Image 1 (cartoon, rainbow, N blue to C red):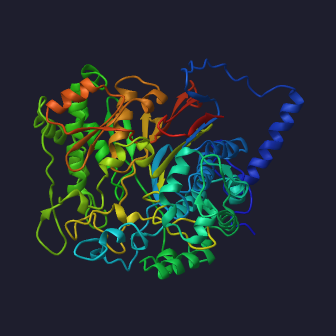
Image 2: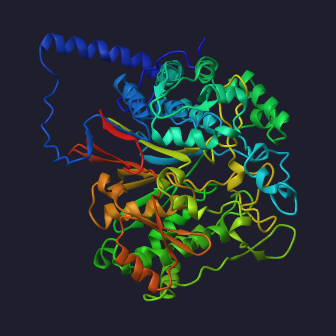
Image 3: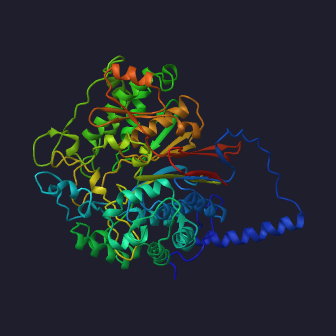
Amino acid sequence: MNWISRRRPSRPNGRPLPPHGRILSVFLVVLVAGGMACAGEPVANAPEVSLPDVPDGVASGQLGMVSSAHPIATRAGLEILEAGGNAFDAAIAVAATLNVVEPMMSGVGGYGTILVYDTEEGRGRFLNASDRIPRAVDSDLFRPPTPGYQENRRGAKAVSTPGNLRAWQAMSEEYGTLSWEELFAPAIRAASDGFEIDERTAGLIASAFGEFAPHAQAIYGREGQPLGVGDRLVQEDLAGSLALIAQDGPSAMYGGSLGEAVASAMEQAGGFLALEDLLLSEADWWEPIHIDYRGVQVMTASPPSTAFPSLVRLGLMSRYDAAELGHNTVPYLHSFAEVTKHAFWSRLAYAGDPEFRPPPLDRLLSEEYWNEVVAQISPDEATPFEYPQVVVEGSASASAGGASAERGTSTDLATISAPGAAYAMSHTTHFVVADQWGNVVSATQTLGNSFGSRIMPEGTGIWLNNSLAYCTFEPKGNPMDAHAGRRKLSGDCPTFILKDGRPWVAIGTPGGHTIGQTVPQMVMNIIDFGMNVQDAISAPRVSFVEPDRLAVEREISPEIRDVLAAMGHKVFEAGGLGNAHGLTIEYGPDGRPIQFLGGADPRGSGMAKGY
């Protein structure tokens, strides 16, 4: 029997009813239906509401919105909404389907960060899907002088406990209304039937194909060659795994046959992840963090996520009149570049597992602190980035710096400046969902690098992450080192903007360490410059790149880049930063949603579509 065996009756906001409420709901439905039949007309005439105009090129809907990195995944979410599911149900369907159609980006073997808004309780919540670092990890193997330490950061030893499936379970149990057989059906269908791959997917398969085991090459190739553009990718093993999960629930992965296959593959490859880590896996709920920004509330994930620097950036930018500076002008971009460097510094200085070293958010998110920092920023000259001193466990303070090549969080400048770099910087995925009741999900999920560790347990079709590659290994013992058994710190930044106490915007992006810089730029595009969600996503971006570069997208003029360089910024041209997705909600006089607008990043090949 399916572990969630049937559709659960729900309240008018899409939330499941308790057992006594289900009986009452049946009685009320019969009573109301009988009354309507006798009267021959609706109980009350709903007032007509004039809908706002829809800007050109923006997706719209009156009962919901889905935006994701692949059209098949977007349609999977809409299928669930149309079947009567809520945003939480649809989010699981989207996530499971992205596992199929973007197998290199996220999935059951991955991790992530989920922000939800529950309209019944009127509050946002952060669901941590990043889980814990395996208990047997030896972080010295990720640092010199260990032979092969760089390879260890990418392969089996970098695999951390996959938390996505546990998070989907927690969201379903707390808020879901449909069975997992219904929610996983679109993903299983896509895996079994296959789909034609595009240029992006074909390129990523080709770049990784040589590292695949023979059983993975048989799925992603033909006659020893990787699949090309227009070829059909059929994933029968993955379809079987998803069907098993739909039937048995997460236990299939966390202790069942899939978990045993993962543990066996890890043992053979010399990884740290063990069956015990899977059995002890859990997803946990946290209160999100937020600031007030020009009269609205901007909310994101709290520690153990490291999304807080995005709010530091917005707080610092609130000390400027962004609208007066002008969108993507030299003064605006210079100010943002200096602000974003400091916020990056704050991450290195203060991030940590809140059970051991909670960041001082009361200070970092205070106006007093913002004023102090901005007062030190020169309006005319770029300031060199300096690494902070951090507390190292078991020894004195040490610099959090070091050569970029020695840090697990370094960015390959050649990669993001190359053609098609939007995809190279997006080894992660983001999606947003909203339903007719006003429930909203904004989720970032990943495998780490493309195809994660490049390890697929035979017969499962599931790629395992290389999450530990994104730890900070120098100096040893710093708060973002690979501490065995502690929570994995993730820099994802799903974000809500609340206006009048209700969700107005849900947005987010992939992009490694550019994530927490891209999101504030999109937020400012909407709030400071009045852009609709699609224009806010499409607008050109910049990003500080550790240790001393400023990535500037090609659409920003050479003249502006030259002036920034003259001010001391080490500017380089980037092909693209991120692959964002977002939506906005308009409400009627009674406080209920009446219109949804959606946007998908032109840097990717996703789709926003309304219901």
